[in-house]
Image 1 (spheres, rainbow, N blue to C red):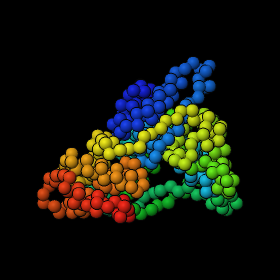
Image 2 (image 1 turned 90 degrees about the vertical axis):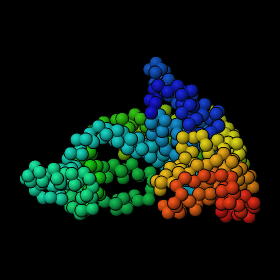
Image 3 (image 1 turned 90 degrees about the horizontal axis):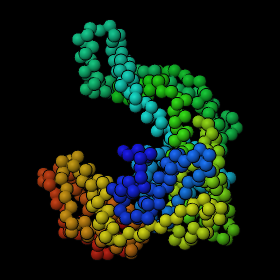
Image 4 (image 1 turned 30 degrees about the horizontal axis):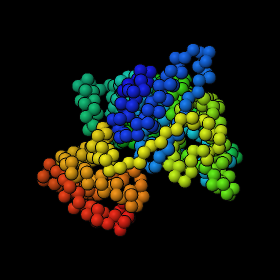
Length: 437
């Protein structure tokens, strides 16, 4: 994986092109945003703090690549990434679900990433301790056995022969009173307090029966946690969340008020007001300490089919200075989506069937008719973009997926006739078969 500090904007786009067809303007904008984040870190310290990130709004219908661009971007630079739907905050409004939970969730993800990275360096050492404890649980007094017997039992353990044997191992449990007992249950704003109380709670040891397979994972996690420097994990996680974190806010157009002044409108306006300080830059308390949001990159997206970005409250608009419009997909785009990406839908299904020793090849005419059916379905029913392709391909391969283990012929060619035979009703009368699509 390319390291973030060496990424040029053009290199970012080249990497995104491996997974996402078209939408070049959106790719360019997010690439510049990531490069600017690195540039800020190299800027003179006297001005670095004042350099703000250019948050982005992606405008376009569903299924055209908005989420995929943001997700792939985070994977590419190995950054903490969180996707949220703006609508999850609308039902209860600004007095209910706390928008600060976005930052707490991002920090949790960052902490998991840092913890995993630090634990990878000690896995070999830990594995020896795991093996020793498992063998002692299976064969009490194992250390006193003869060397020949020890090696024999070690081989059985490593080969998985003992995986289903039941053993009893020691586990640690954190004990604390429920938040309802403290009189503060049901309020999202008390989540940091609840988490901190859990961390401070005394640990109780007890023995539990489980299989060797399950016990291995429990012992490994326990031993890794003993050796990992928890303060170092928090330090790395905090820095990464604050300076590399990416938050993708989907369906932001759904929190635009209709202008009727109803209860729902009040809720939507409240969500916008609560999002503003998070995106503008504030400090949020988490169970790992305070997190500053000033340099977290926020990417929002929405169809804006019955509204526009200008309908958002002016202050919130100002926090998304970069706006990029994603284009609807046509049949030609669908052909490319089926063929070109490294993780294309066809490649995914081919690999699934390969596990049953079935080699499936799609002819060009089959790909073209799948793309055309998907495009026509989007035009006549509801435009869900590239998501329609998976529905069509699943229908085409339905019988193969069901019968694959028992099929004698291991090389299957999918051509136009094969596709039409499987989806004939869909192709001839899409409107009549809405329930299938």
